[in-house]
Length: 583
Image (cartoon, rainbow, N blue to C red):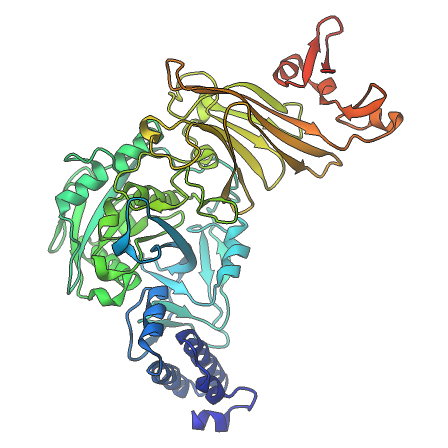
């Protein structure tokens, strides 16, 4: 450090940073700045030496509490020194979701305990290993992936190596670069998926379950127990296979691999395989994931684990990581902490991310919608619950005959009638299961009747109520209203047309004993609050009409007979064959 301060411009004094180091994040930032500066001065060998040793020396000053906190954050083992190598591989950008333990840790979890998550950007190499991109922070994720400009799994990552080389920290599993990477859409990438039906959510998808043995511990479940927890072969009636099949009405089926496959020293049987790695559990979950991936490829002679199955579940030993699970958006892999591999709530949440779904929130918490699987995960083993209205629409399982859609910008602006739960058969013509309300380029609303029965009996919120959710530009969904009989919910909708429309959702009645699965009688319609104009301007403005010496909302005049009858604020005049507002 004395040498550095004597040879680098005084504007950067590592000794001052060093003397005030409060965390390993400060250590990392200090070390990386040193490396970049020394490389620019063309003394790269000294840069490598100091980058590794400055960090390890400073880290030794930190207490055990900080050590534990840092290791918990990045899922890595404590390290005595940095091991760095130049990173040159091409890679795809994946958004990683890491489930966080509740206060008190997983050891004190009960069936009512709930799990939250954090996210980061990973670089996946062609063989399936993944590394955290250190320079891509939360703001970078939101600006690029959150707005839908780029899609996880359909984006290439390009690092700038013109100033300094890109490094891989083998211990922290991080890629270190001078600045954030450049993102490039893959040639086959979809242009957008906002509020559209996601592709590849129907049909048969194979699942491979990997039981992991580390150098010092192993997954506590046997291959037979893992098979039962995923496919329900020996008494586990609620599992990944059964719940996805039930919620989708057999549109999406997770199945076993059709036959055995022998590896060099292990074999896949009944879609389960045991993989042994030389690493100990103290290396952390992410490094162990990469070790398992490498060993899978080696054992079965494949270039990537996705060549073995559509989705691959890694079941790690309990002490391999502090988190219940982590996964990647729009991808092939989920990783679980021991018994969480058999939790239906965790399975459907994590593989839901694999399918391309984002979180379900309420209020200011993006995980707090507990009516469906993409909110919190739960500590219980079996959870009979499906997805909220927004997710159900995106999955497309009920689209053929049971979707209804109204649009603020057209004359199809209302719906009045029955709304039935997703328990009904979507292949039979009938009343809608989901109503989508299009209100503008970035926000749509979705309305369902959340019947707490059958394969949705364990829904945690809005039981037997009409639920309204909306999506934002990042495809997060938000629970906005939980309505019982006779209740009405309204919200102002600005469609940039000069009209301040108000969306109204009214529940006239709820019938749980109709001989089928129950239904709700609802009215969904728009009103307008800004027709405060004089007579001449009122008649010229779309959506407004002059009546009783005042300017009022009058979309009725633009309605067809069918639309007029559907809007509770309008009435069809048979003699004049016109739609008029109800006085």
